[in-house]
Length: 210
Image (cartoon, rainbow, N blue to C red; front, side, top):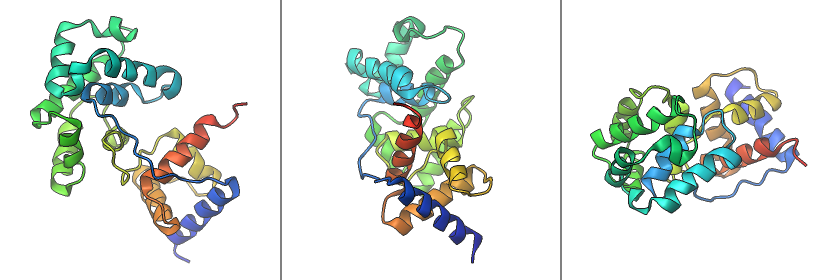
């Protein structure tokens, strides 16, 4: 049996044993400021208690930051560490600023603009190349940004997805291989990659909680 097919079989068995039921729901923001804040703060941070409340605060209190130009004006006018109640020396704060500037360089103004770029192979390659110049922005953050625009065809391979694949008995794989495995498994089961990714993340993020 092809190793890839064998791994898909293992992952499907693990998914079925746990009773995971992926749902085709968009995970997206309609607000550039909230999207960028979410993407920049998310790595290695509790999403529900730390990231989401801050991204939601940007969405709620800076309605004019729904466009990139509006968000950049807010970043110039406001004290971001105080607003987000975030450690001033954190590298995630300049990551917010530099991500916004990189997207401005690409001519992105709205979430719809950014979504278009992640749905066209040529534009996506250009977008990834530009954003990779931002410090601490890697493949996972790029895939996560795509997901936050509403894409169900991207998989952000974080520690939860890695652990789930390992729990399924699949040998150690690199980032791209895990992403390809999740996509192949989703295709075999009749789900979008994003729906399966979300189901895995939700299961792993609540594992062990009462």
